[in-house]
Length: 167
Image 1 (cartoon, one colour):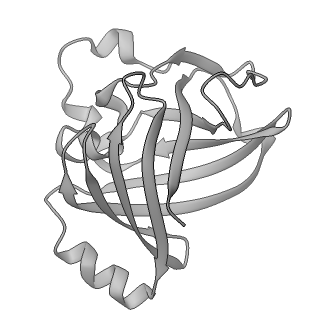
Image 2 (image 1 turned 90 degrees about the horizontal axis):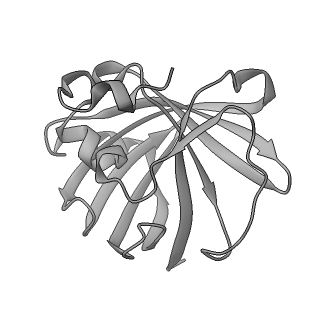
């Protein structure tokens, strides 16, 4: 289904894992990546494959067009082979907080050490319960977009690294 995704993103500064009720390994790559613009992503999430198209984001970085559909696993694996250089490897944990579910991504590979949490909202103004392990908000900061991280891994960040640390 075509829709608008509204989400806010935060760094994680505490132990969220005891509250997680599910976790899946994710591997993804990009066929097209224009930062805050258009992206075409191929993803393996657990034992399922997906293709996702994202459009340009709002000025706030909270809202953007998104279309996603499941594809056969063998096709996802083949498409990952033709993606741009730089793959994202992470484990996604699901953590309830109030009536919302946070998706907490613990990155591996070249982005080891980075942990971010996202919460999807019905509107940009919607309020939500912020768990104690939630740190600095990075919504709209292109450095924390997976498409950016695939080309500029966290392990290679030189400037502002100290202020970007999770702990």
